Length: 441
Image (cartoon, rainbow, N blue to C red):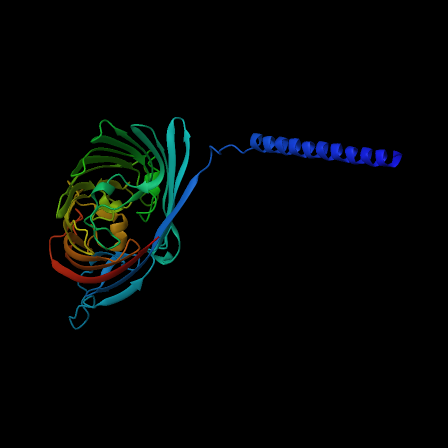
């Protein structure tokens, strides 16, 4: 009997212990679960979202004449002047063929946290065009731009398109030059403020410098001040229109003359543009006009002319004047095939009131290319016009083929101290045939 009581007592004790142990495990699980809930990580408010984009591009092109251009003439600018050999044959009347993939591009769109009541974002973009003609295939910076967006105001800081490059009203040409030298093309380090007065009207104000679109940025840096831009734009789903103006004050040299004398000479430049786009069916029409001074930094005809009355005199400077206009027609269609046409004209008006009897020298990238001169014995381009029809074949969002024909005609003449030409005129013309392949990602 006593043994049975002992057994019964042991069984009871084990049952109570098991029950207590089970309850303890359950309570512990609840505590652990509660602790997990308490230690759940909070959202990172400083997180930056990154979105990659870009494209692989190949350009195949053939010119019927030797060309002045950029990027191994991927950007065709001016048909070369007549160059006669001892037998009177034109050496530059010769065709040229090339294939390049240097415009292939990669970039990131950045979306940051809200700061100071503004949404933050940025763009970082580059391509393989190279920073110099000898740097083809090298990776170069295109855009590095930070934006702060409030309800009606945007602040942008960094390198981006010059405000004259209006993304809402661009030519739709296949060529990488976007219609240059008729079209004004430039990117600048800048600080830009955009303010929306209404849903349709906005004002753009910018201070900017110069970096890539000139062979020498010292005149911009030594000026001790940025260039200034002001633009008013009206935009609806059907119509976009605007006017813009720029002021620039440059110090071309720190010294000049022989022997060298410190120079405080400056040159002021004023430039203006107007543009509009009509987005209708079945045709989208875009057009723009420019009145420019020292337009060479926009890959256009022009620059500045330095005048020296004697070898010991300090060189003085005046801007060359340029006017241009263009129109672009694009078929507004959802079909895979679409047609377009670009046409434009640019005129070198030279310097107003040149210094008679002085030695004249032009400065700017157009001079480096050999398209503009004010020196005795030099040759200069008076005007250029082009007509560019195109055909786009869009197979998908990723893959697109573009076919384009570019007919460009430039008038060359013997240079005068104005930077324009009068005598011995010659019309040089080129026909470019181009096929572009784009694979977007």
